Image 1 (cartoon, rainbow over the protein chains, first blue to last red):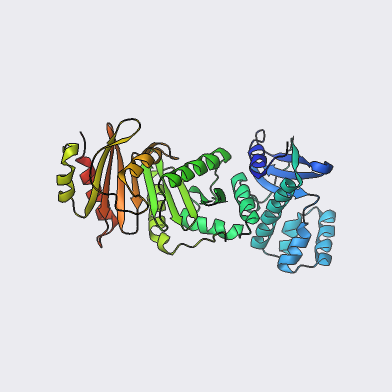
Image 2: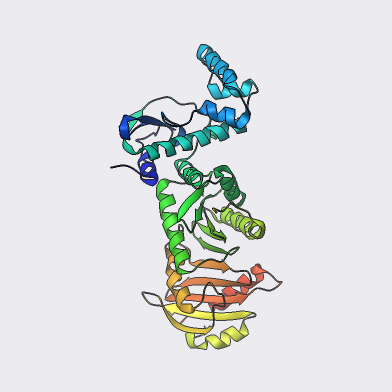
Length: 265
Length: 112
């Protein structure tokens, strides 16, 4: 049976501990791909039918293939990491490297899914050393894939979410009409949390629609939550302490009137 | 304490209060009410009663108190040992902080 995008991520979400290794993925027609993980985070994905990272770097930042080939050759001789060498030589910035690596990873996963994923086999290894800023949580990767499929700027949507979360709260953005998550927080959100929060938010919205630029908030002994809506996009943030909940609510209440997020057409 | 059937009096005594409702039982049913939810998206007490258990009990964090902020009004849903009280207040220039205090004071007086 072929795995769809969410079924694939549900499988990827369960690497044996400590979650460092590679998912070797076989697709229909005998093609192969890889999803590399470190401590449960997605570091890199590749698919032999997917676009190459070099092409993407050239397209985005105008670094020629000749230059990239020279960097690759140098890296092979010195053992230096490719990305770090691109930065050291001034071809791209760290932020550009992070952006292009993350998008390449998500596009490769989408390419694997489109090719029909048949098998996922976990191959543990000891390799480590990916720069944390270039890796993605599994839920971030899943949501970025959804945004890419919908033709939206995944980074910008994640940025909109983080203006509310400020890097201290877990949360997500949900497009109500498609019933899909479009962004997950920088603060780690597990796959089961993403699924259960998505289901709950859609249930609440189906029972009583939250008006645009309105918000709902609940508080309990262990923190609380805030749900807000702008047009078809609902944000949900969950805090784990009273102090964080207080700051979260202040941010949402003060920023909601002017908060902008890209919406699907 | 104000008995549920005295909700009209409590509503009149609470500044800018548009509605008060008391729900009880399983599933949650409207026992008594005064006024309305006063929000197009939350059209009736029945609709509030249907969503209340999800908001109070099923969310990422169980929350005995839930606040809904609408452009011109706020709803406070508060879980009590024997049911759920809902207070609806129109917002004024005094802001949501003052409205929330008033709603909590009113909610504290609703219990059978």
